[in-house]
Image (cartoon, rainbow, N blue to C red; front, side, top):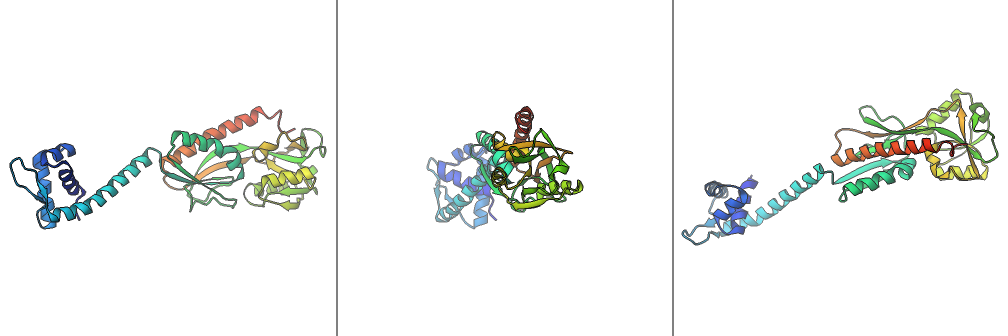
Length: 301
């Protein structure tokens, strides 16, 4: 195996034209550089430079030219690898992120915008996944509203309240008793992830859920509630853009359904870019919760 340092010495002499200039460029003494060229020649089995002596410059030999041609490919690959490693440590490169609707619509726009301002060369790839477990086999980190598998790292990003979503006029007052939902037609997400928590809370309160429609689309749920198909129990941030819709009414539930907790889940060591995305998610999530608190009087009614 040829040492890259020896190939770099060969390349420097060929480019600069003299052993002295090459030694200066590489930060060696001329004798050290000469020793490196001699070592290279022993390894390739022949002279790589003719040394005419005096003021005349060394000339690369046919063997030296052959080795140099191959050396350039290796040296360029080494330089590219070093640059990629430096960019990685500086927070550049690529990050693959698992997400779901609320995170995609409400949280990630602010996170992605800030990350790309900090790291314009970053490549961010999103995978929207509405399954029971985060897809950590294909992403660096994933947002999830359920606990991650055993052995994963979890950081809480935000939590938000579950509210009752109904057609305006269906209920009066700011709060509705959970028992009042018994037997009502309901529109719901598939019974996985956070929706499983909702339905467990209803079952624990002995509320019979008459689910007439399930969809993974949050907007589909609000559309069907608006049309009068049924009511829905949803996390506030899932319907954040609908809070001012006069056709919809939002009510707190008594007793409350446990808050939805959104976490960012990962396994193993994160790249600096992925770690920074996680930091920004927590920061932006905190701002969302603060905004939610400020709007509580003008939100769920």
